Image (cartoon, rainbow, N blue to C red):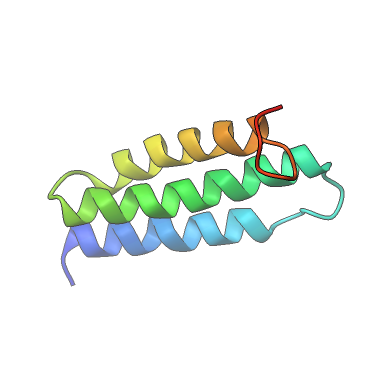
Length: 80
């Protein structure tokens, strides 16, 4: 297994674990931000890996973007 594949798998697994850890006490907005961050991190890692870039950098950028979008949208998917 190459280092890039191992790094991408680690980023993906970490994003999934973070998304499921301790969500019960969070508000709806916080849950959307956490979920968006996890989805963005997984997507960013995959895109970084597939395009020959850094999976870690992709995960960081995707996670930040996903968290921001999740926090800024309402339950119906519209901007607050």
